[in-house]
Image (cartoon, rainbow, N blue to C red; front, side, top):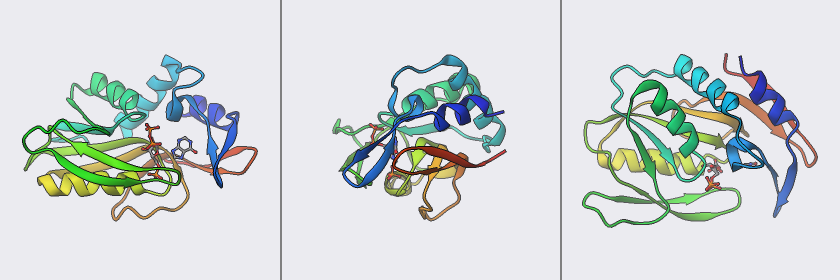
Length: 183
Ligand SMILES: O=P(O)(O)OC[C@H]1O[C@H](OP(=O)(O)OP(=O)(O)O)[C@H](O)[C@@H]1O
Ligand code: HPA
């Protein structure tokens, strides 16, 4: 079911970002190009594995959650909320701090309120810093999280709740290996 994702990951290049082995892949970086069939494969798998009952909104983070969220939104008719890296100052906006293996910044949540039931989607979970920040923001506005799902998991981050990972990878300085799949 995830043949395209697995093959594309296992042939993806790895570069250094400081000490961090950073793999470069269409889903996590948008380069060199995104094949519609790969997006469809991921969208179909997410529809199968996610608990979407009663879900009002799909929540993703700028930038590399957006194409995955759009794919899922088009397949399910559930509206999409994009958490941004800049503030709009709208009423009810919540700011949280994000730390990853190679960056720090602020994330700004708009468009989700008390009682909303959401699924949280991202491209990759590595240190878990981004998902922890997003879960904190959703908690602050009083939203319920039905499910959390990422396309690719690496490492063994604790985000304080279960996270469905379509594939799990190990990344060495010269290659990516897929070591597990969700289905
Ligand atoms: O588990 P973590 O260590 O938090 O890493 C995962 C996050 O890192 C990347 O985002 P990044 O902030 O690099 O921004 P981008 O989506 O704009 O590339 C990726 O899109 C995830 O959101
Ligand atoms: O190794 C990576 N590649 C792409 N995006 C990422 N986000 C966290 N780690 C990575």
